[in-house]
Image (cartoon, rainbow, N blue to C red; front, top):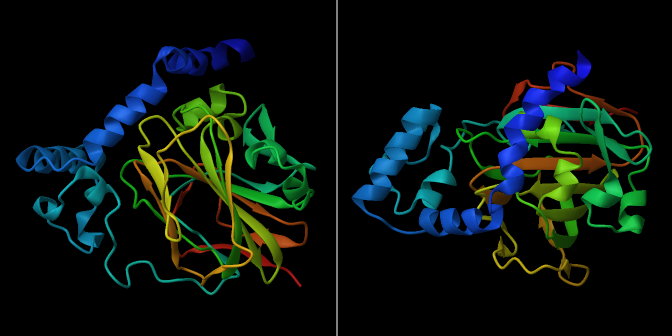
Length: 288
């Protein structure tokens, strides 16, 4: 019975192994960045209806004002619609909780029966990964209808950024259950910070049709997509960000994974896998 229950997920993701995911992603990215006039507006209106996007929260709610689909997809919110909670760490995105909790040594839970390591997530850097042994993690999934800018859960200083090449599987819950090591397998941008409580990592994980990922200090990170790891260090020109500041965005959405160091951390007691979350809500507090 157990093997039979897993089979539908495996069958559902089988086409993803066969599809030319990178070519499809490049093609969709080009289309999303092109100004198509009435055609672009028609696509945006369809998308709003199809996914139930709440345009009342957008700084500009008029679909005709967006020059490209990417402009619409990365739309800003009205001032005040996402107030920040009084918490050490606030939720950095609108989305849904994939998994969260304590690390098992250096292992993160991806889905029932699937784990991956912090070292794999950060692109193989054992020294960086070791900072989080016995720490905590949170993985949040952004669906198509969500606001797709990413904000800082706490005040922090950026120390380095790493672009890790990889696959471009979908990152929806079905794929997370069926593809081993999904979040350490897909292309990602790993951002390492120093906070008042120690090191912190926020990784932006790409997916099929995610045209690119961008940060506020660098701009678009990908493309290009070379088949090698790229790294930027900010020791001599540090980037300081306050809690709630925008730090990046997805041009077509995906997932963020956060790593917290060892130490007492209490996640929001209302959190549970699959639950909806909003930017600015309480995510976690340090204890003591």
